[in-house]
Length: 127
Image 1 (tube, rainbow, N blue to C red):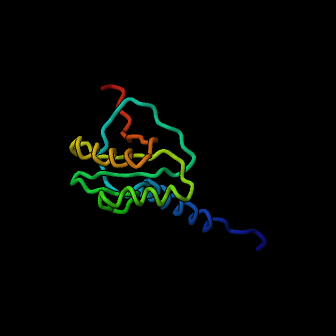
Image 2: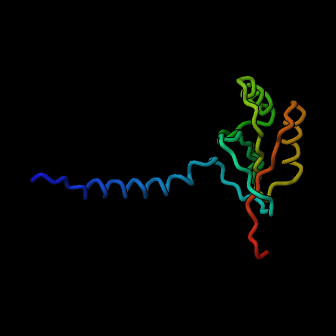
């Protein structure tokens, strides 16, 4: 028989496609946060952003690692010492007190970081 049977290869590729479709949304920042909604346009990015998250219980995360508020600035300074010159994104659950978010942003700003952005969800058009 001189023909190659491609059916098993197609089956494997379809299974891999399904696995990646399920796993891709889980590869974002690992802190579960219910973001507020706005009508602002989405930013186009080529690199992975540096994300600071404030959870509903006011815990602070750098990427997906929980850190204390006093450790935030030294860790950011260590990261930026290696040449990181991108915007820092702050994510917060909509139930977090405004003062908690501003305390985190104030620490970042006081350390000399001026490129700070707040992350939101896209608002539905009918609202």
